[in-house]
Amino acid sequence: MTVDDDEAVPLRRVDVRRYVTPLREGGSMPAVVEADDLGLYVLKFRGAGQGVRALMAEIICAGLARALGLPVPEVVLAELDPELARTEPDPEIQDLIRASAGLNVALDYLPGSVNFDPAADAVTPDFASRLVWFDALVSNVDRTARNTNLLIWHGRPWLIDHGAALTFHHAWDGAVADPAKPFAPIADHVLLPRASALAQVDAPLAARLTPAVLRPVLAAVPDSFLLLAAGQGAAALADPELHRQAYVQYFQARLAERGRWLQGAIDARG
Image 1 (cartoon, rainbow, N blue to C red):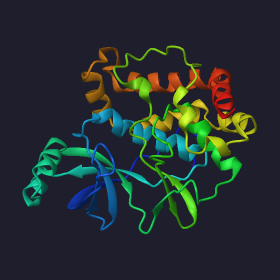
Image 2: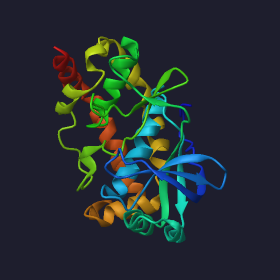
Image 3: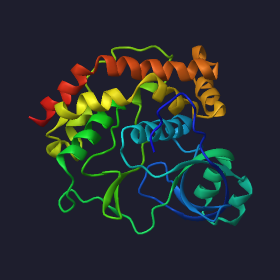
């Protein structure tokens, strides 16, 4: 699904009913949970070490990826009852559930999916180029051969786990500083060697991310998340609408001056 006008598409909300199992691969220890719609989701905890900005990054990056035609699981807002901690024997999990009481973010669980294997799974140069371009735009440090954050599901790659992206917004005051800055970690991107069409995909992808598309992506971020983030050091962003607009302005500036960071990715291939 792509967003093509200023009408925000709200995220679905679910209530977590059962903690199923932890996913200990991630540093924030997400978990598979069952919700009141009987669906299974991968829950990202607000009380994990990366905090609320990691959840905001999940929402924003998923919205941008969809607008660019890249496949990501559905993202939902998940209400977590701290009483669920009483049924968990692991004290670490108990603490995480209690620290995350209230609203969190979850991604649709893709049953039967397997981790992308760069040595065995083929992707087209077009897909690789679009993904590298996207990850350079959102400053995603976490798509390496060691941790691809790609799943193969029904024969196609799906993007997951964007909590480590948007590195600029940690301790952010809303200012746009050097939006053209190349993203050096792109040199370690798992698909960079296959991204031979970066120059060709650039203009079509940038054209998709108009202000009319960016605004609904940011509108999906709950006010409560924006207020929490502002309370952690960004006093100038205390108003949620101004906070959202600062993100829109950041992406507009990064897109307008993308020549330098795009060239950085192209040079990294060489």
